[in-house]
Image (cartoon, rainbow, N blue to C red; front, side, top):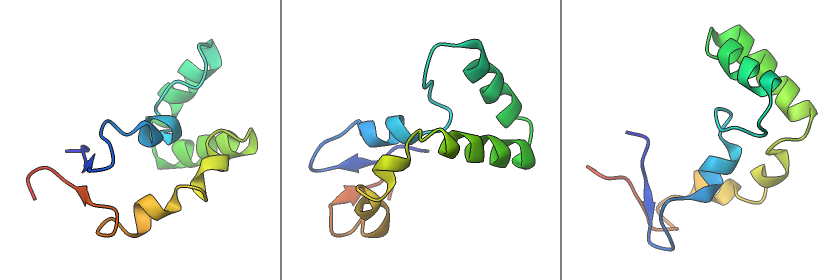
Length: 81
């Protein structure tokens, strides 16, 4: 499962915002990118680099890095554990 809960709030919008499979804009080239990226690691790595080049999601990585590094300090719980 890819679900987690946080006692400070649930249905985390951060994950939605930074997810490479989430639609950034409604356009054909983003749909094409999702399709190409799902075809293999090399293609998805290239598309991630292009995504970073345009600045999608990069501004939030440092700000919310705490979420990934110290889950026990921020009361993150994973269902079933």
